[in-house]
Amino acid sequence: MNFEKAISHLKDVDSEFATILNKTGPINLPPPRANFESLIDSIVSQQLSVKAASTIFQRVSLILENDMTPPKVLSIPSEELRSAGLSGQKTTYLYALAEAFSRKPEVYNQLHELPDEEVINTLTEIKGIGVWTAQMFLMFTLLREDVFPIGDLGIRRGMENLIFEGEKQSHEKLIQRAEIWSPYRSIASLYLWKAQD
Image 1 (tube, one colour):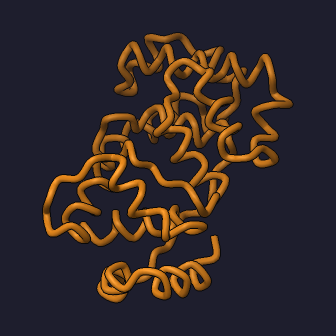
Image 2 (cartoon, helix red, strand yellow):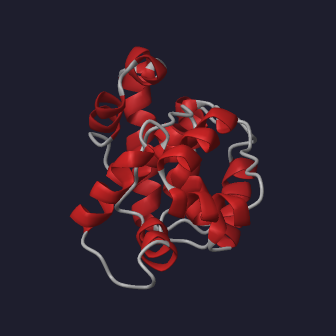
């Protein structure tokens, strides 16, 4: 992601957002993970605090002996995965993910070559992966710069609090307001999250 270019663009097109940028320090993204490992992390993290998700992901990594591959996941009994703190449903999702990658490795290992919508459509065919998870994958694994995850509560609250003075807004209004941030809506989203920390 080209933060320098994005910040310059966001300041040029949106004076309100420029204020947010000036108050928020720099953002440092961790290096992206491999596709399969990243999606394991996404499934583990669904509806959990960052701390709880991190703890469970570390336990899952230990069970997998840091071998984040479809065959390894499929070789582990569900009881063992559940002992890491995964729900039965998330365990099912991990198996579905591993089966999808095993069936079509050429598709899932080449996601970086697909446009955003195709990545979302491809990933959401896997049980347990919805649009939000696919968007997080686009942002944090493929480092796509123009993703706007309107389904994320933090994004909606951030916009309402920081731009609309606390007034609740419709999804349509928020999407429309964010259009001027394109082609850097991912980076704008990162700053919305960070500004609320």
